[in-house]
Length: 243
Image (cartoon, rainbow, N blue to C red; front, side):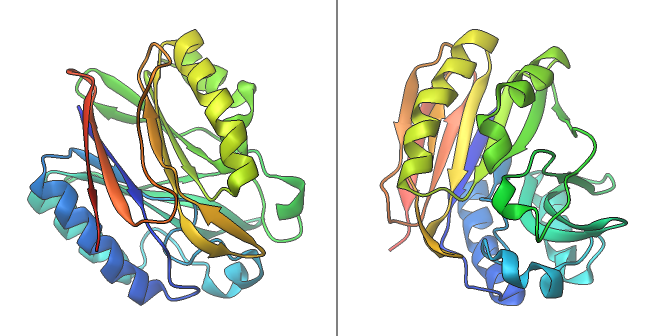
């Protein structure tokens, strides 16, 4: 399977503008054979907890129909980050578009303490099935918690997608943790990180992929928008930077 991680700088609070940016990344991924593309945490709004309540929406938002259309036409799974309205509050979510089937929403289950004033946690893990692959999304902080990846593996996941917004300190932790879970759980681990200012910190890119033996295959630069494509069968990668 050809997986694609998008490393993008979101336009703060601008869903419409970010949709257009996402489309550019999606088209480039499709042109290069990707079968799934995923974006960083809250990619359609930027990681902006203080703005999330006013920006929150649902998976059926008509503005997202373009993602379903592209998904259906290009046979490409698309996973975007957005705050969503839940019965108990606002969740940090990934809306998942698959060809010709209903949309799914995965909401971050394990929040960082800094997020408690703004968000509620999700209550179940969502999986994406593709051929012989079981794919588990993870969102930022929870992807560094062993309980999350262990649960994903116990439920058959062999691919782990970490959608994040991480500072340099967070990336250093990820570089230690992700290869460990890849090796110990025999999972391909792919990370999509944003770049630029996010809330009160600087998100530093370095999106990367580790094969199911825990070996780092490719890591992107810190402050460049790009896509990274990884083929799980050949264990080879390619990447493209946006000028």
